[in-house]
Length: 216
Image (cartoon, rainbow, N blue to C red; front, side, top):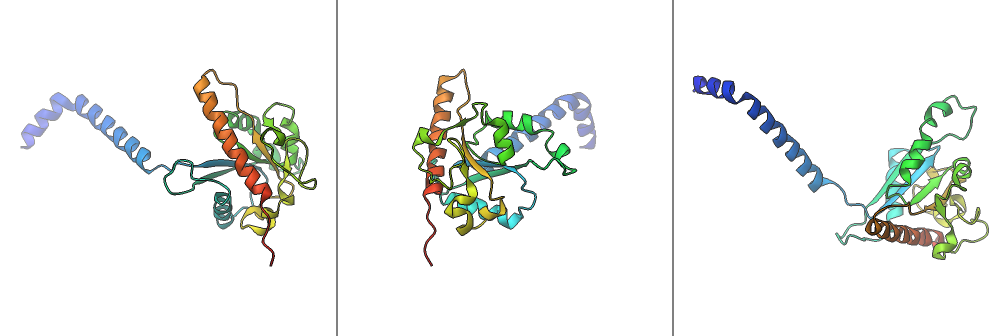
């Protein structure tokens, strides 16, 4: 038996290695496909979020799901909440290092599914004239005067949900909520898909802004 194996390995070593390699790759891909989460909404926070604990992060995701819908019809509402660090205080020793990739991050965000962005005001001011955001009027998002920062942005800390729902207050109160514009795409079908995603995320913002904390 050993002699047969030695002979087989001698004549078919390369083919066996290649076959095993592609088999492993196929198994990994199948596992990823069947175990990955299908998200219903995508939200990204870019600001000073280093103090957000795991518990607070989970609370944010849970609270956001109350404003989203099960758009894929699988019986669960899954929200993808991501965060990137941006430090507006230039005297902070870490600001140079942590902010160095912010330009590429914002450019990449434009072509991703994240349509709701929670931004540090300084970062927002850097990009508000870039065409990256759409006005709240585009989807008739009603914002009361205290919460309105300008025609594009909403003050997170002036919304009832900020203090009354778990997790949100772990982000700075001056964080701004904005709706991302649909990027220019050569594929018309992809553009329509992105427009549908934008409209869906606009409804989430509507639900969030309209939320009124229950009276004690």
